[in-house]
Amino acid sequence: MQSIAIIGCGAIGEAVGAYLANNDDVEIDVAIVNPGREARAREIYGKNTEVAHDISDVSTAIDVAVDCAGHPALRQHGEAILARGIDLITVSSGALADAELLTRLQAASRAGGAQLRVVAGASGALDALAAARGGKLRHVTYRGRKPPQGWRGSVAEERLDLDALTEATVHFSGNARDAALEYPKNANVAASVALAGVGFDDTRVELIADPGIERNVHEVVAEGDFGRCEFSRAGESLPDNPRSSALTAMSVVRAILDGVSPIVI
Image 1 (cartoon, rainbow, N blue to C red):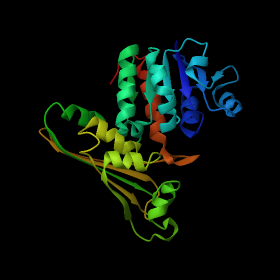
Image 2: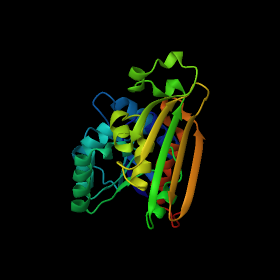
Image 3: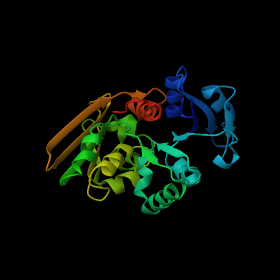
Image 4: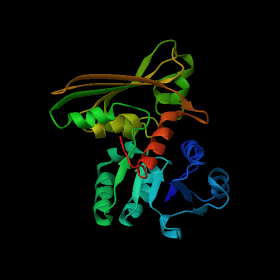
């Protein structure tokens, strides 16, 4: 059985814990959380879960760590986990737009002989983009549409009156690096598309508040030697966090189970 440490105990972590609750191949043995969140972690992951504030405090032997807590958690814990030789699965692809952080994580990964694995998250088509890099991938555009409430807590509130919108309105247009840095809780899909494809600086991004939709919509358009790819997905948000996709939690579960599956797709 594979031993898992989960970082965070928010909406994504809770969903991952629920999906894995009855799985016989993996066990969530450790939760790494901020001070004051210990009781919540045990409520979500089980009363026997070892709860710690840092990987250095963990006594249980861990096979894989899983970041479900966002950019600050990856910055705080990522290097130490990788340097210990523990593979790390993360939902915080947007944090890798910080070139200095990316360099440090790559160095820790090499030093520890561990992998940092970025999950597909709320989008699809990442396998096609990654494969297309084998030839020449010329253009990649990502458009993220969310209902106005899905942009609460972001800089979109400074740029738009979200309560007064009557039509779809673009509040960001630029590259994936700027999108990820300006929208740390909303643009992880843009970052994942960039990592899979032509990189942060060459991936075009539009972020849109749309009062005419009820679900988050992710659109990817790519062109290259392989031809042209257009992908669109309308997804459900997690009940406790309209900024996060239910598919993000599912993609974390898939990444975990891929580690114990005899066949991986």
